[in-house]
Image (cartoon, rainbow, N blue to C red; front, side, top):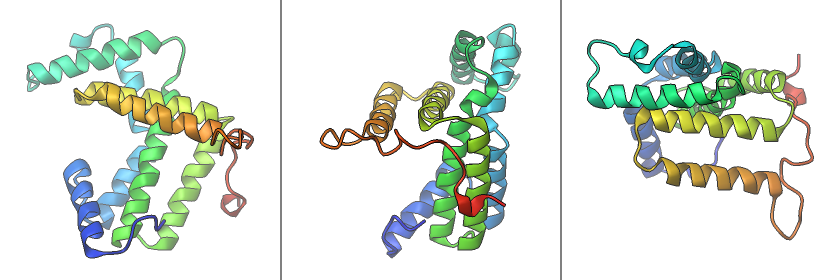
Length: 196
């Protein structure tokens, strides 16, 4: 849980990210967002987009042209993958972001270490039930990241996805000198500490 240095500047930066990117200013808001992600925020979005007959069905009256363009991109993506992945196929993106928020929340004191551990065990258990390997988890994470970027209309989606893809490949392959990926030879299961 403590990968950043506990110094005022670092804590300030984490709080800014939580506020600006996730509208989280306290423990209750953090827990609410984490529960929403565990429940499958982007998985549900994928299902909603894929089940729509057209992008226009997703438009709301108060959407501007940028929002409609974003919805159209996301709809086309979901329709393209509709037959090959299920909504649950994006769960790794939700669980990965939830884990990140829990770690940051513990770092700034929004949740206790015990609460963070409990949340992480819930996430590990859910991931172990949905995925058979870290490779499957990684593919799900990348697909979720792509949908996120399409919805947000980020101009740097390709740069972001290249970085995510490279990181995932490095974790799966490992260092060229050891030829053993950090994740490659391990089955996907919850940590024994999390199993009741």
